[in-house]
Amino acid sequence: MKKQSTNTNTSFKHRLHEIIYEADTRGGKIFDVVLLIAILASIILVMLESVNSFDAKYHTFLDISEWVITILFSIEYILRIVAIKKPLKYIFSFYGIIDLLSTIPKYLAIAFAGTHQLAALRALRLLRVFRILKLARYIGASNRLVIALKASRAKIAVFLFFVIILCIILGTIMYMIEGEENGFTSIPRSVYWAIVTLTTVGYGDIAPNTPLGQFIASIIMILGYGIIAIPTGIVTSEMTKTDKIHTNTQSCPNCLAGEHIDDAEFCYNCGNKLN
Image (cartoon, rainbow, N blue to C red; front, side, top):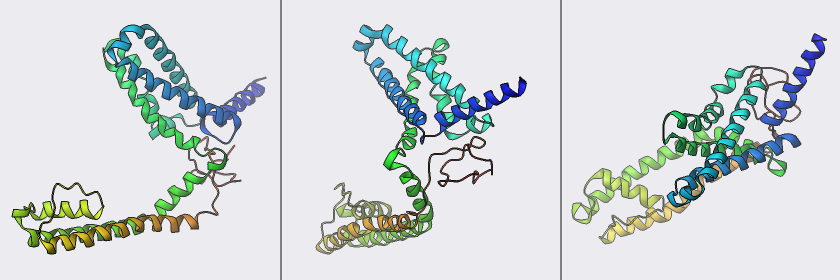
């Protein structure tokens, strides 16, 4: 009888883990969509409550609705802890801390007036939308982008370093050409102008007045359009290398590691057998 009870408990936790932490199953998809709707509803309620005229008319409704959502989030937080083998992994994880911070404001409001407005922190929970984006035809796309960004970080760092050096050189040249009388009062301010111009933002708070300065500015603007395409090319090149890597939303019940390769039997992080 005890063995049967243990098996039932394990089966329940396994099913709970699939629904809460994974988005590949039907139950997981429904859970993620409902969670997203609840988060959006909670944020809208907090925003409406800050409108005095609306709050005065519907305060009771807003308060009750907020309590209902808070209780639902509390239950969800507890279930997330129950569903994994090592609860502390979730509690002290990035999402675990966000989930806790988005749940406690309403409880704090009982003792400290005004703190319920901190419920707006629930907007951070919208980060979970990235799991929902993996559904259907989007599955694995975000993972490939992350992998590509990680693989190209060294190249991008070198590129950014080159751009910084270029801006310092161009800013110094413009300081020497334009001078203080044309708004280029110092090298740092001139470097600021070079960055704004190179990135094609063009605030217009500083502008060259001499023909030579305007000529150099024109070259910098044209150069800016070319520079914008470089990081895109670097990341795209890396993404083509990861196209053959197919990952899913399967989450390890032991360490919560995600982004496992399709058909993987063991977790790449801790070696635990996947469900």
